[in-house]
Length: 396
Image 1 (spheres, helix red, strand yellow):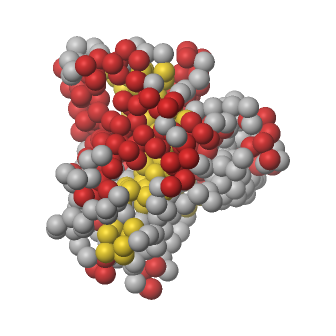
Image 2 (tube, rainbow, N blue to C red):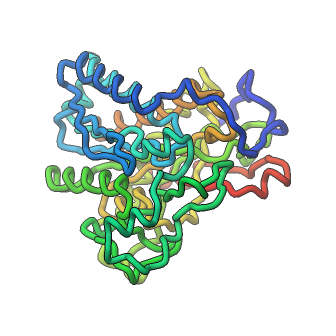
């Protein structure tokens, strides 16, 4: 396939930096605007979209789930588990608006074949602070879980500067390391502080909310067919064969080592389905490549690094429980790009979700060759200069 040309208006790779900056983000949907927009969508959809408060963040902000469709396949989509990764929330709102109000054959097919549940902005405290971590102290954790008093704080507890944010006055946790494939797990002192290669503990309200929604869908449907988590990555990654073209988005379906050969995870070997996750990602990739002639940025899609082993993420934990898993990692967090390219990046997420949902609803996903997944170009290097490259870029 001929490689698409670089998009006019996109900065040259040499101009890129991952240095944290204080950039405008007011065009993104904030928490109060999210509540207003979800209520509007529920109203104009005539009830086709059902919005429910499914919990509260550590600082008491509402976390909402929006449900649409009556089909037998459950699809769960979450965004902004990291509060500085915002395009996914805007893409979810657009998706819900379309799915709840459109009379097109495609929308009708989605509603009849799928039950889509979206939890946009699942870390609202971090989102309001425009930072990766939530807003929670270790003392608050031990107050909720007295059995942890005297334990060393979790390894993912932030108390020092990261990505330009100072957590010393308002500590917090990377919520995307707080999941556990044992959906009934409760925190145990002997499991702390843990490491990145270990499972999480469900000590944050935000992870517990998503876990409980997931468990409810499993109870209702027998399984969650697909779980999608919408993220951002560094701003300066380039295509592997062309350092003048920035990666618009990386995708992945692999987040854990094979449970059949991983000590302690053998019980998940029968439910884990990497092949289906690969097929889902191929559907995303095909949809974007199909639109690349009209928008060359859609052609700059790569595979996220495949040496990831993160069973403490939502994607890793839910994949072990049998869900097809899809990671979206669009270009640039708010501390590096702000709201620059917001419209283009949100559209990238939307097109990818559209292609995936269409493929699931039609059943065509089962006909996709999972081997195509392994031919998706790998993510190229970051072209940030040496000083910038030394900064800690946290993903996913």
